Length: 424
Image (cartoon, rainbow, N blue to C red; front, side, top):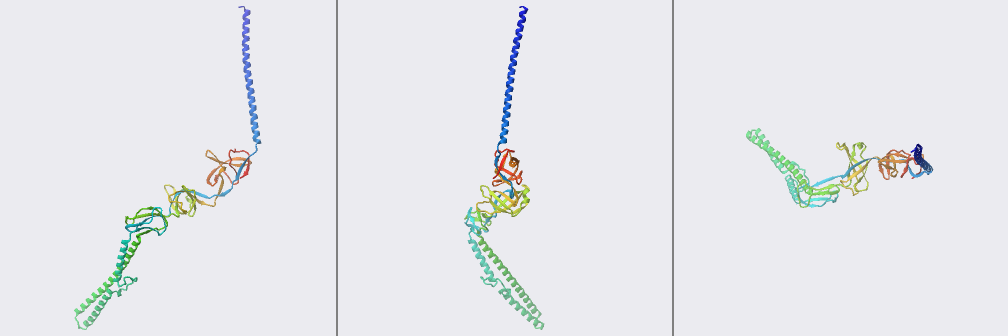
């Protein structure tokens, strides 16, 4: 190929290459300009939207909310405790004498009054024993020279027949001795006759002393017969078992017709009014518990609130549980039962005051409790610590002060949001 043609071909190739590069540069420039324009438009739109939102917020009216002003309210200081109810008195009634059970007058759940019949042992044997002891007593009275059916038991020893007889013999022996002694001094009677009369006098004196001892023995026997008579009467009385106090039969343990030994249990009787409330108080609260403090309690399955009064305190803390046993008496209107589990509040100070707010003023999230207070026309979040609930209110232990204005039913309110407070 001629050199002229080769140079022209090379120039054409270079020209074509430059055209391709120009098209690429043009395309790249176009896309860069389009992206910049879109970015500028988006920024302008975002800026306009944010501006409009701020403008609308600044222009929105304050949210109207209900509020309540915090004040110090009467709030009793109490100690929470758990325990159970027990019968004030519980007795297992047993028969005092042996014999066949003739009558069982009560059963499980029977309501009895003090002195009412519980059970009866057959009394015939004890009636016969009473008659026997009465006969022996009458015999002892007669031997002392008293009337068999009399009431006077005073005995003059010298007036009893035995003593009077021995006294007469003693007087006779003394007179014989005195007479023989005078005759012996005159030499009329021998010394041996004097010794005989002296011996007879001593024998009469001894018999007289024995008669006194015998009468005293009969007096002792009379006292013994009287005691035996009282025992027989008491045994006859003990064939009847009666209620020692007002109560209800908790358990029946014998049946009519059984042969019972003395001391055999018949029934278990419990006093139902008042009841004994036994509570366990933690050691840290033991110093605040006093006799005569009021107690409010509830039992399982019953919504009623019952009241009582502290009557007895244990003198020591239980070493294993670190608890103090406390007992209160609780009036029973009829529906309380011994053995029931109870939750009780012991009022340790009825004059104290505290902060209460409505329950619906609280907001809770993840275990954190808070309220909103109104400060300078805005709702301000305040973290709190709550105590016990009292009706529709709840105790605020920390986080609020008297005079704070608390928002009720805050809903989705935000901290710092303008509010228009209205007292509820």
